[in-house]
View (cartoon, rainbow, N blue to C red):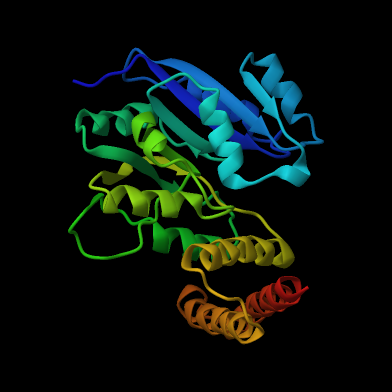
Length: 283
């Protein structure tokens, strides 16, 4: 059985003081194997005391300026400074739901063809409706293995909570400024590796954002998609995506909230997000 003693964690942070202590406690409590944890925190200019919490816990801390943050570069930097053959990537606000979370993730690497494993995500209680719909749509209750030759589909691989094999990362480090996880998993499968969705290994993870913050996150993802597809960004495309998001939200809201009067303020928030999407994308 493949049971490495040393497991490296790379945790990217920005103003995560409300969560990171709880995350460290949860990682300390992981059972199911003789694991030794090697933790690296890559902080991008937190102002809320997050680095001080990391220092107090004795983990490896790398600090970079906020202005230079890049999802892939920050993650690659953390991996370069870590030690293990298996690398667990976590958002600081992704909290494992159970104490056997790590053991479930690691167990799949008995198969030498497995390059990465990712967790099911569960919305935090009270999460905004759009986050609940998005997460439940992306992360089903059925386990899945993505391999070369399987039906073409988007792999919802997420570095909010994943585990990858260092040797696979060495073949292909992360590249994109956002959505780097999906690009990496797509490469892995096309190169003959396997990606596993471990539904029994779940984390609490959802975003609590304003409409403008949500729009900016979508802009980051679309810019990454433009780069990956060599797609020229035109205003017509941005406007089409914005309108399409409102239409999709309207359809999902009819299923999520049957009462018309309750749907109206939620639909207004959707319209605001689409407005900021166009305005901030187009400058």
